[in-house]
Length: 270
Image (cartoon, rainbow, N blue to C red; front, side, top):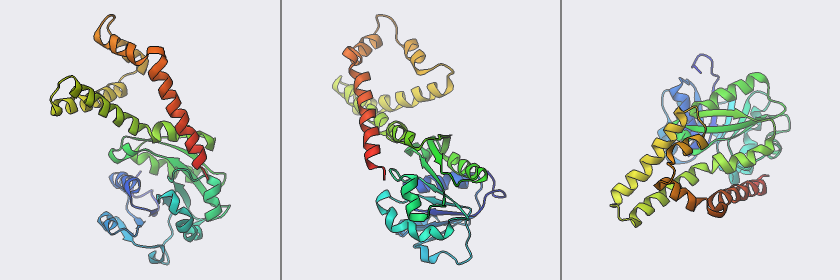
C-alpha cells in the first residue's frame, strides 16, 4: 500500500476499531482520508492526511472516495447509512459492523452497492489483529484487492465465500481476545491464591501469555505439539492439565462457549 496507489477514503466512525484502521493506513502511507464522526474526541484524528467532519452534510461536494469504510455502531446503522447511498456505484463499501448482513446493508445503501462485510478483532489496535471478510456479488476484483489492502493494515486478512461463516468467526476471533484476557485474570488470581505478591502474579500471568503467543507465532509446530513439549510426564504441568481436562471439563466447556457465541451471532444478524 502506498499513497500513490490508494484512492481517497471515507471513514464513517472514528471509534476504537475505526481509529485502529486509520492508524494502520497512516503507517502504510495513506494520503487522503475523510473521517465523519460527531464526537468531539474525533478531532484528534485530524492531520495533514486526514480531515475530520462532524456530519455527512459537511462532506465537500466534489469528494469522490474509492472506498467507504462503515465503522459505526450496528444499532446506529439504519439512521446513518442511507445518507451514504449516493456513493453506491462509485465506491466499495467495507462494513465492520457486527451483526449487519450484506442484505441488511444493501437495504440501506441500494441493492447494487458493492459491499464487503468484515469481522476484525481488537488486536488490530497494535497491528496484530485478524480479519475475515466476505465480498458481495457486485464487488469487482479491483475493489476486493483494495479492501484486502485496507483491512490488512491491522494484521492478517482471510476471505470466505459464505457469509454464514462470519458467525463462528465472530465467536472465535471476534470474541477471542476476551477469552484470553479472562485466562490472564484467572491465572493472576490463582497466583494470588497461592501466595504470590500481586505485582508478581500479574506480571507472570501477562508475560506468560505474551511469551507463549510469540512462541506459537514463531513455531512451525501446531499448538498441540507445543503443549506436549512443555508437559513433562509425571510433572507439575501434567497434573494441572489433568484437572483442566478431567471428564472433558475444559474442552467441553470451551466448545459450548463457542457454540453459544455462534448462535448469538446468528440471532443478532439482520
